[in-house]
Length: 393
Image (cartoon, rainbow, N blue to C red; front, side, top):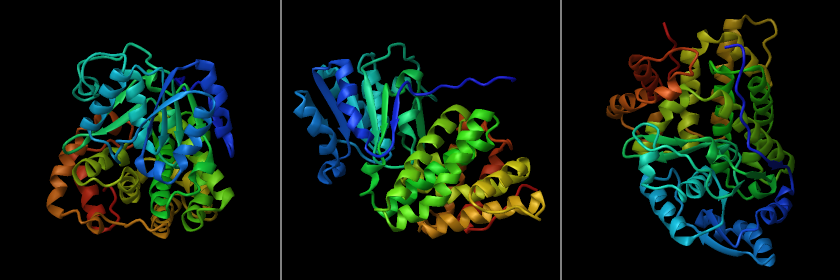
């Protein structure tokens, strides 16, 4: 294909203090009742009050919905959509990590549709989204998922995950204020940060990459590569938090348009079966998937190495692409994420079931520069279980 289709959120505010634009943007829609979907921990930490207080001060009626859990199961979304339909709200605001934002999208759009949330799932649903839904503003409090700029909501099923995807799920306004990420704990900063890095890397090696997404991806890798360790080890470092927010935002734009592939396909069953966070699932798999596919995209692996701050000078492409994998392994280790599946207490006996579920993620696998068969997937899981780098022979 000689051209690329590029889709972006209609309006974004990105940068320190950008939350100040919330009230003026809400005023543009003149809502009477606003539903705020968020995590109960963020309420306890006082972060949600930074959003709701100025709105209430401007006379808006706010209803807080806090029944949000990480890696939200289908039944959680069903309950929220029912609540939204019954509440007759005029706007939805999502505040939090990817789980809260994904649920807020569904609440806004499916509130004006019929049927269950399950009816709209990508793998098994039979209904189509055909109405724009309620206005929605998405405000991330982590630097990781990119949910504020994508048209996808991810839900956990019994043993894997599925998505609902439509451009009507795009935020009307995204507000990315790194100031809201200052209090994110180190473990969450690490997991969400590697999640964002994975988005950028998978978008860069995707078969649907374009010159535009390449630029977004490489800058995201540069920003995250230089700031992730500092953000984890010193969460109050303002510049590190700014870099991580910008990097996550750019990575979200990149993977929304170019797509993610093998890492995410193999990560979904880990979240579904063992409830690993999405960031940890991606982090533990990233080096093993890249090592396995690297010979299908060696020059791009060299580009990733250089964006991470490494050097390919005097090295062959083969050597530099291998060092790229090792650089990523070291970075993940330095931010405290375990390096193999066994470290997450995942038994070797589970690998066959994980393989079967990952092989079903054809939408994701189709974007890989190396087509991964079920046998390939099983080999990668085994490598990740043992902590040993394996390559496609």
